[in-house]
Length: 192
Ligand SMILES: Nc1ncnc2c1ncn2[C@@H]1O[C@H](COP(=O)(O)OP(=O)(O)OP(=O)(O)O)[C@@H](O)[C@H]1O
Image 1 (cartoon, rainbow, N blue to C red):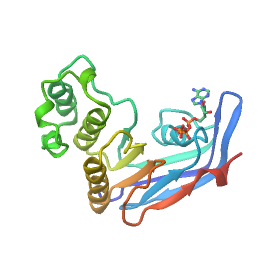
Image 2 (cartoon, rainbow, N blue to C red):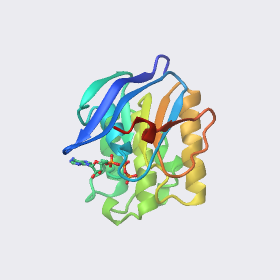
Image 3 (cartoon, protein in one colour):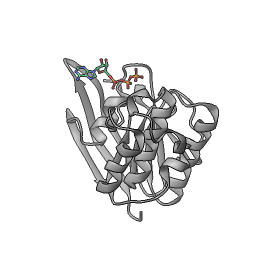
Image 4 (tube, helix red, strand yellow):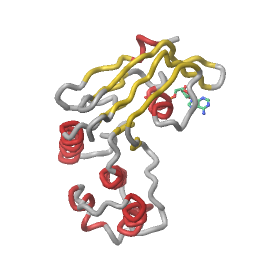
């Protein structure tokens, strides 16, 4: 994952008729991680979607070296399919084998349709998909929501392993996220 990086320069975000934040510049290189913090509605998810290239910036630029993997409340797993087949769909496209489902403790749930999974199980499944994607840049939107204590520790360990391999992580979370070297980005300091 050498060379993974993401940078935003002079970014501004407008939603509807409201300017949420402006003059936001940040740069992350290989192995670095950022926790975006701020109150409900300040624009954390919006920032991650702009970084992912899924929403336009009102001003400024984003440059990324390496593919982006976004984990949010909407895992791209077909709700009608059993979890094993939903993950296999992506495994074929991503071209990675690996044991992501086992790592996430999902082995006993592979026959269960995605729509029947609990909140925490869906989040674990989203992490399994993220691991399979092997993207150097992780954008994690509330990654700990719905996870029990053991799964929180696992999510933190996965992020630490990702950064230790030279990956980059941007984490939007209201909860503390234990990750060595994690820097804060206080969105209120960029409020427009
Ligand atoms: N497509 C949209 N059109 C108009 N307004 C939007 C759109 N998407 C989000 N917003 C508004 O933008 C603001 C920021 O939303 P966002 O989801 O980025 O906040 P957040 O900081 O992630 O909040 P939370 O902590 O509750 O998850 C909110 O007021 C929201 O209603």
